[in-house]
Amino acid sequence: MRVMIVGANGEVGRLLVAQLLANGDEPIAGLRADEDGEDLEDQGIAVRRVDLLAKPERIASTLMDAEAVIFAAGSGGRTKDDMTLLIDLDGAVKTMQAAEIAGVKRFMMISMLFAEDRNRWADPLKPLYVAKFYADNWLVHQTHLAYTIVQPGALSFHAGTGKVQSDPLAVGSIPRADLAAFMVAALHAPQTIGKTIPLLSGEQPIQTVIDQL
Image 1 (tube, rainbow, N blue to C red):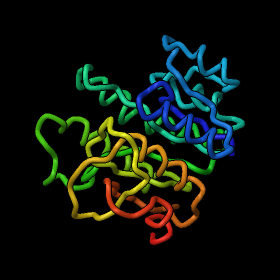
Image 2: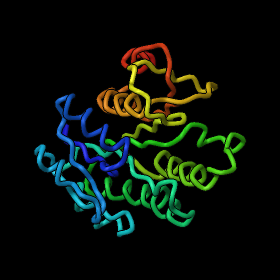
Image 3: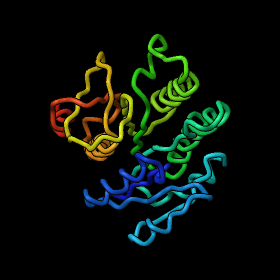
Image 4: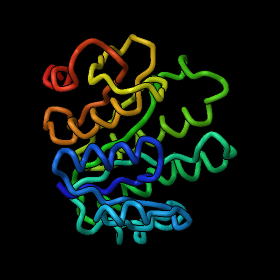
């Protein structure tokens, strides 16, 4: 499957590229104009410049031959709240609109745990929760995309274990490598379409958790 990763130069984005390659998929690396993609191009990976501040029609021009989109972009912890709104909310929504313009049906969204529950929002991260809440809601209620929303717990740099859980009441973390592996597996699993999936480290293999959805 030809898959556009928006935010392919991020910590999770790089892992997604590797996972897609290992799975036999064809990743397209969506990078900002100022990001260096030479090492990706050296691996034979198509690199495209995706400006999330641009209009949806311009973003759509980078998606025309994609079969799926994974939105893994984020403004990052060092930016101010205005960039959280412009990238994590408006950039996400414009990418959804762009996917529909380009005729891409499959859309995978990386959200965050408890994004739909205001009572669980931690104060330092509230602007990001707000962005994820409304972006997720737009995807569910304002598009016709075949979506999957994955809501991971706190992301760690630990080595992946391949073992996860999807308990909506659990709290915890997950290695970035396991999030990337789950995203790629879920991409190809029809039973994940139309689902919002909490995701944490656990005791069950990724495919087992997906099969139980």
